[in-house]
Length: 606
Image (cartoon, rainbow, N blue to C red; front, side, top):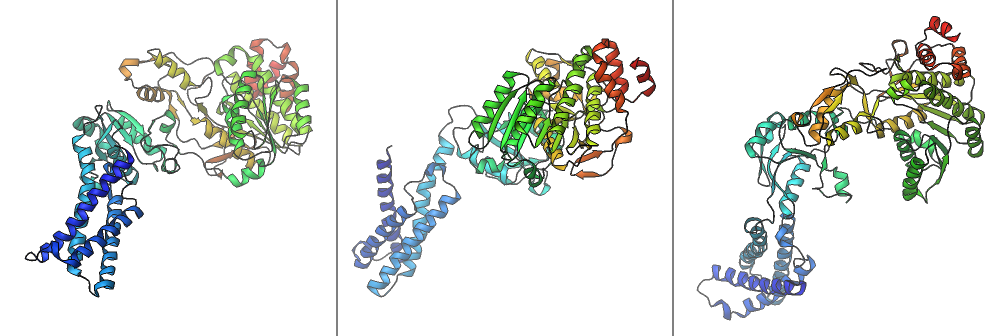
C-alpha cells in the first residue's frame, strides 16, 4: 500500500471512530434522545473531528508503523486524544457557555479504546497470524536486566530475525518465574544445561554488558555443556551510538575466557608523553608493534615512525593508519634492520623521536634453539643498537618489549631477552634517557602463538597438538599487551621492569578445549594429542624472579621488579665474540649469562 493511500485509509477510519465515539457516548448517557438531531452534538462532533485530525498530524499518528506498536505509541495516542477532547470542550464552553463533561469523559474513554484497538490490532495480527518466512531458532537469554529485556523486545518486534526468545536465565532469585515481554525467567546459571535441554534451545545469548571476564568464563563453562551455540550481545554504548544493531551478536572469543578484566589506562599521563610528540616503533609490522602503533595513534602524536625489516608488514600497518589518520598526524614508514647500526643511528638523527617503543625481536622459542646466533644478533645486538642510538640523540623514554621467558630462562629466546634487559639497564645508569622494560606472558593471536596454530589444526579436522597436559602459561590479548607498553612508558623513571598482574596461569589443554568448543566441534570430533615438551620450554612460566619481586603495585594491576646486579663485562664479551662461537657455545653462553652462572661463564668465555 502506498504512503498516500495508507494515510487516507487511516483518516477515514479515525473519522468513523471519532463520530462513533461521541455519538455512542451521548447515547449511553441519554438513550431516549434522538442524538442525530441535536444541534449541539452535531457541532461538537465537527469540532472533535477537526481537532482529532489536527493533533493526529501533530503527534504523527498517521506516520507510525503500527505493526510494531508498543507502550510508547499508546502514550502518543492518549496525548493526541486528550488534547482533541480538551480542545472540543473549550470550544463548547466558548460557544455554548457550558461543557458536557460526562459526555466528553465517556467519549474520551471510547475514543482511546477504539483508536488504540484499531492500531494495536495490526500488531496482534502480525504477531499471531503472519507466519515467519523461516523456521526460527529458539534462543535462551542470559540476563533478565535492561539489556536482556531490550533484546527480547527487539527480537519480538522484528519479524526478519531468525531468533525466537523462549526463556531467561538470571541469578537474581527474585526474578525467578517472572515474565518479561511474555518470556519467563526459568532459573540460574547453574541450571543452563537442564533448561537448554527442556526448552530445546538452539542459541544462547549472553545479554549482560557489565559482566566481568571471570563471570563470562563461569557462564561459558555451563553453556559449553550444551549443544547450543553461545553468543554475546553488543555493548549498550555501541547500540546507542548506532555502531551495531541490538541483535548483531558476536561469537564468544578465547579472549573472553581469560578470566581477567583489562587494565584501565592513565590516559592523562600517557597523553602528556605522546600528544604532539614524535614516536618511533621498531618492529612496527609485527603483532605487538602494529597494535602499539594503533594505540599510540589514539593520542594524536605529531609524527609516528613505523620502523621494520619486512616491507610487506610495514606497508600493511602504514596503509591501515593512513586510511584512518591521514589528516591527523605524520606517518612515516621506515624500512630498516635493527642489526644495521649505521642505519638505526641515521634514523634517530634524522627524526629525533621523543619516545621509542622497541618491539623488534625474534620470539619463537623452538626456532631460536636452532638459531641462537640470530637470536643474539636481533634480540641483543639489535636492542643495543637502538638503545645506544636513543641515548646518543636524546630520546626521553625508551621502552623495551620483553617477555616472561626472560625470568630464570631455560631457552635461547628467553635468555637473549634477559640480556637485552641487562643492556638497557646498564645504559640507564649514566643516560638522560629513561630506559625501561615491559614483561608480559603469551599474547593471544600473535604470530607464532598457539591460537592460530590450534585454529589451523581444528580446521584440518584435528587433532589439536598440546605439549603436556599440565603445562600452563600466562595469557593476555594483543591490545592489553600494547596498552601496558604505553602505560609503562608513561610511568618510566628509568631502570624499571614492569609486569602486568595477569591473573592465574591457564592450562594450555584447557585453552585447546575451549577453542574446540568455540569452533563448533566437540572434543570427541577433534581430539587432543600430546607431543611432549619441546627444546627450551618450561612447564610453568614466571613473571618475576624471586629476587626481583616488589609486592606493591605501582599502578592498578601493574607491578615493578627490583633492579638485579649483574656483570656487564660478560654481556660485552658475548657481543664482541659471538661470531666466533660455535652454535652450541652461543646457546650455553647466553643461558649461563642470563641465569648469572658466573663460574660457567668464565669457562665459556675461553
